[in-house]
Image (cartoon, rainbow, N blue to C red; front, side, top):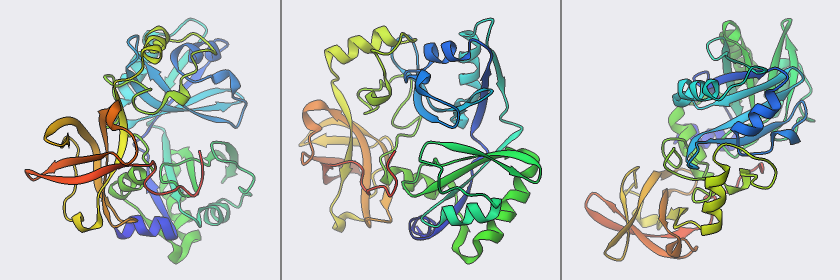
Length: 332
């Protein structure tokens, strides 16, 4: 709780080196990524970053990823647990004019998140970062090495992520800590999870997986059915036309229930009928009350609809609320 509150009020530093990085190069790289992802990669120019999905032929989500557009090609940032699966999937769909390489082991990722992040990262790198817009990046020279500094993150606060060679990670961490002084504190992945949940950001393996589709997960905005053909497009077009039967919703609870915490897998009820399941749940340090995300039937997805979650064999009343739980400081 203390770590999460520090990020919201000051700034925190995160070790995200577990994330995967996969490079896609060659004359066919753009066409390949257009076929393998749901968003329109052709809209990117060097310095742009795009949130997108990889879907299977049935429209299920293989992974949600970031695409970084460089002068020399593309770099995909993938979820750590999906790194090997994504690499195998990309290689299985590859073509002769595309080169795919996993550079995860040689790449470290350090994130600085919070209202004071710009000042601290700028000081540590001796670089002007104010012109870097959200979901964009710039290359910065540090000790003779070119680093990628992006204005991305999963907390809702102003944020930067620094990609650098693994053998420079400790030095970079220490440089950032020195630049931050008492304002900067190391933050663990537990706080990162509560921060993203307050923003209603999906986490692969919880809100999305290969059995969920983008429309029910609220990610239809990254599916460009009219812009191109891609793997899973036919199935997704049919899903969109037919409409979804369930939706991912935010569920809030009254403050007096702050000791009853909904957790992943807990059943959701409408009256005495089980209607869904919690995908992620926690105690919100910002709101000082329990919150969760859950899939429920479409007819129960309207804001204000009463639902309950079975917690320790007791149905705790709540209701569908507007997303996100906490308004982000920086819009995507």
